[in-house]
Image 1 (tube, helix red, strand yellow):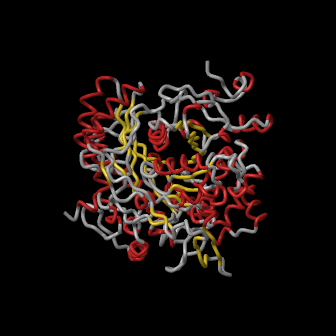
Image 2: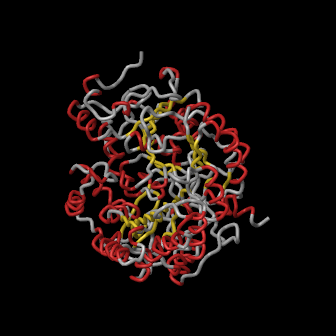
Image 3: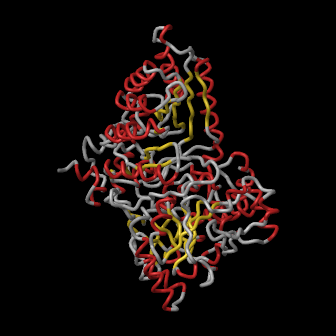
Amino acid sequence: MRKTALSDEILLNIEKPARYIGGEVNSVYKDARNVDIRFAMCFPDVYEIGMSHLGIQILYDMFNRREDTWCERVYSPWLDLDKELRRLRQPLFALESQDEVRKFDFLGITIQFEMCYTNILQILDLSHIPLHAADRTKDHPFVIGGGPCAYNPEPLAEFFDMFYIGEGETAYDRLFDVYKEWKSSGASRQDFLRAAAGIEGIYVPAFYDVEYREDGTIASFAPNDPCAPRTVRKQVVMDMTEAPYPMKPVVPYIKATQDRVVLEIQRGCIRGCRFCQAGMIYRPTRERSADTLKEYARAMLANTGHEEISLSSLSSSDYSKLGELVTFLIDEFKDKGINISLPSLRIDAFSLDVMSKVQDIRKSSLTFAPEAGSQRMRDVINKGLTEEEILTGAGQAFEGGWTKVKLYFMLGLPTETEEDMKDIARLSDRVARRYYEIPKEQRRGRCQITASSSFFVPKPFTPFQWASMHPAEEYDRRAHLVNDEFREQLNRKSLKYNWHDADVTVLEGVMARGDRRVAKVIERAYRLGCLFDSWTESFHNDLWMQAFADTGVDIAFYTQRERKEDERFPWDFIDIGVTRSFLWREWKRAQEGIVTPNCRESCSGCGAAGFGGGVCHESKD
């Protein structure tokens, strides 16, 4: 019988105890005495969020295929268990074995969102692992970070032994082999880090020094050890069809945020939206073969018992075999009670036709992201979408039976004017107006248009990485201006408007573009009690403001400056393939409102062709 790390008394007195007991369908169990490497894979948020993350499922499956490795999972304990573990001084544990995380060889943390940074310190603290990498010994796991936020690892640099830059399917096997050689050699912890730094894609922060100018900008960033490369190149899986993929994903005990089978149909995006980090760091666009995806669908549904299958990508409409794949899924599974989910679709005739076949139109809503209300702003961000296309798509949806539409926008984009802001409300009203152009006898009551605004955060490796942000009060002012405009619209009873938390946005901006000096703010905020900062009920902006005051770090320096062309960024040592010169060119084109064609229409010379495959490569044939 499996042991549990938590007593029955604790399990009976915390929320959702199934988060912590393991034993789920398809979870992997090995004899710890018969493996050389124990890897604790961590998602620094609650179980329900972490279990919805495809990347962890891929690496969990891939690592456990190795006979010499046992990969287990760990998630952030919710506030109730956090309190109990501290009271009892009981170390955090992994789900499968229920063994203490501090006894593992590696603690791997996927970093998906800047507002989880205090949760990373929670994981280390509860595991009784020193927060600072410099304080760890051979008795502690090597702490390695990865995921999209690792493309600017500097705010977290002193907490991690190393970072993996890029897609995990490529270099981890090499890292594990090097670890086994080191482990049997009896060499020092530093020796393993030196060996790891020689593997392409691995960044060891301790082997680099940063110097700053009087104005606070970075003067130099250079290796301090001959083992460390001057540039760390991201890792890319070029053959997606042959890449590892979990045929038996772990099935959660409790309802996860995305409780379904996920088919990743492609990686990357051809569109080139200038605000979108994922669209740049995951270039070039690479597809999985439709035949392989069909096999995956059959196997994963059989192995999980899930009743929904979702097609995952940044822009599903751009997958070249979407029609063939969806037709197969309908024919194969629709009569078996399997729902098919199609996120990330553009609203056009083809996509609407596909969705009408797989969705219950009476219950479902269409989600569409114009991102900006005015055509001028959509050209600035390179959305590649006209108002005519938006209204035509909405009209076709309404005529097809849909009455609920969700529209996503951003506020605070570069060059934004008050007219651009007000156009969010005006465009939403024109979408509603298009519904009421349908003859009354053909309508299904009143339409419901829900518009939501997030606030723009300039991210590393985007054309907007040079842009400035605004103070929280200015974001709130803009949101209220848009809200007032919604109240003036003819169809206001059919319209609803929501907006994001401005305080969280400002903090996200500091973390996204911060340097090593931000680490002391994160640590101070954690010590003050900040945790689960992406959760409204546990976010405490006053404590964060105190942390900035206590450490003397200026928020405005990181958020309210437009950067100069030659400013050295904290992440400039990373090579993502897309060149800085291309990003700067796109930044200048944005200011002029010039649209850049997508990758299938024309190659813009971004640099990703250097990887030797994908859409950009094919377009040159």
